[in-house]
Image 1 (cartoon, rainbow, N blue to C red):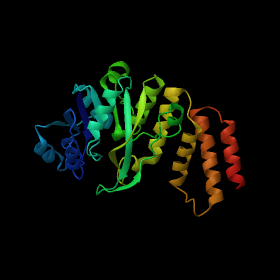
Image 2 (image 1 turned 120 degrees about the vertical axis):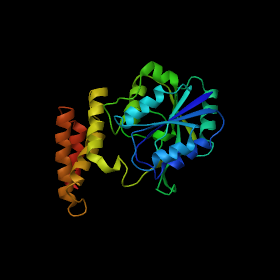
Image 3 (image 1 turned 180 degrees about the vertical axis):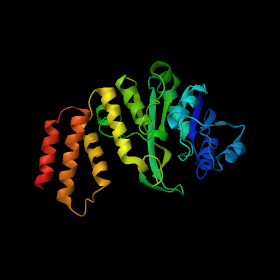
Image 4 (image 1 turned 30 degrees about the vertical axis):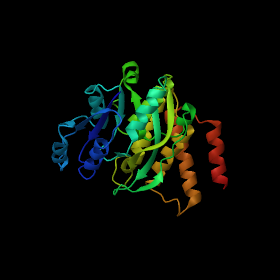
Length: 284
């Protein structure tokens, strides 16, 4: 069973050698690794050259991370596909365990495992909050850690590639889209990957934009946005300007008002559950 690992990259010279090495040290399958780099200006290309020809790579300007992942999927032919960002890592034996699971469960289309959040020195500081597969629960929170997920190529052949209009939640949107289409997911109760979490990474650095994109995605995919994501957006907006510690009552009121505004913007109505939640915040 051949496994294709796709790595999108841009100016991650600080981490990418560890990413590449974590793939190179895997066994248990025929593995091809491709890197689509967006024209990095740091030492990324020098590191990629050192890993060639085992790693195939391209470095030129692209349309962003989602475009790079899609290019990588199109450039490979493995039966199993993994997507590993250039600052994340696989743990030893991860791919072998995934291949064994797919071989033993031919009806499963997507498998995801447990993972850690790791710091800039690769130290795990918390478990990623992973949960068993449940589409309705996934709509409330993204409990799948992206580098710990693998899917069969037949998924792409049947349901297409990632949505290139998305820049932050392309992975979450893909899992939801597949789940909505009836694709079969399974949780592998083994730790497979480390997902790097640090102040400068893309998602942490643009919380309001991230949550706005998630809301747009839900509206497009399901016709409405869950209250939980509207509340998350409102918190992100209010926290940009106001401190929760300075005035808890005022903060709660501002979040409540922004939540109502968000509900009207994306859902064109305010749910009874949202109204009850806001009322209870203000009373406290």
